[in-house]
Image (cartoon, rainbow, N blue to C red; front, top):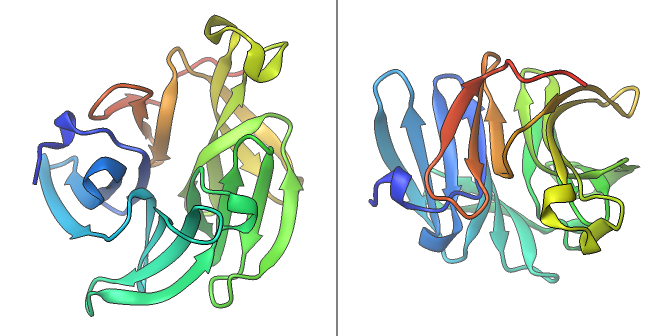
Length: 216
């Protein structure tokens, strides 16, 4: 397995003591233990893997493939096979996580947050977001995500005009309730209750920081 600091990382989730990592170029899911510094390969897949979230039945992954280029796959580590597979709604595929037994999937450019049933893949509901959102991450029953305001001209704005945040989204009130400004361009993020783990756009490897950004 290549060293994690030498590969591009597109998805993360923190579960108990492990940081789970998705690396699409290597079609790889790996774990990293912050306490020991040990990295371990968990699986390689047929398609690129864009995000990963552990589950009691195995691993949920956002992968290439599917009708619109993105699909959700539940993989059994014990059996080494797919248990379930759904197309991502509307081609959404900019991140996925589990909160309260439901799958939450973001469609960044369409500014949508989908809630899916884990058994059928049925869309329970769709929430419109104020800004672009991607790389959702769960901490207990909290939903965190990366929020992007591209600027006054949207995608035609200059890069320097964009603003990025690690934001906590209240699912009951359907709004952002905590917004932490980020002084870099994040590619993906996970939260362990005390620290944010993240990779930066167009950089390899990952970093972490305490939850000490300025609140907005």
